[in-house]
Image (cartoon, helix red, strand yellow):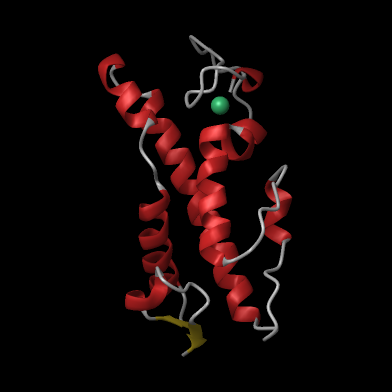
Length: 144
Ligand SMILES: [Zn+2]
């Protein structure tokens, strides 16, 4: 934000207060955010790719079924995750001082699971998601 001319009281990462905040750090490299991504990779049953930037959105899920729908759903899940991390960051950034430490301890993973299922099922005419099974198996999706 500073590089875009927006004055800030601090340029430190709101999650860790250690590193300067930039896109790489805020969305991927901060240890608090990396913990969330590790849960997402585990949920999808894939090894942590340790993404360095938004190019990871071009990554395909290794699937023996060659199911393009699964890759579309995975990428949509990643977009919802990025949005959720940004919303989490903004809740901390705009919080009263007395609320900051509590907000830093939040874990957005469970809400990412629910929100991504709702978002994908509401936004896609072609993909059917059974929300009862989504959290336990995000690859159990099918075409309408
Ligand atoms: Zn950080």
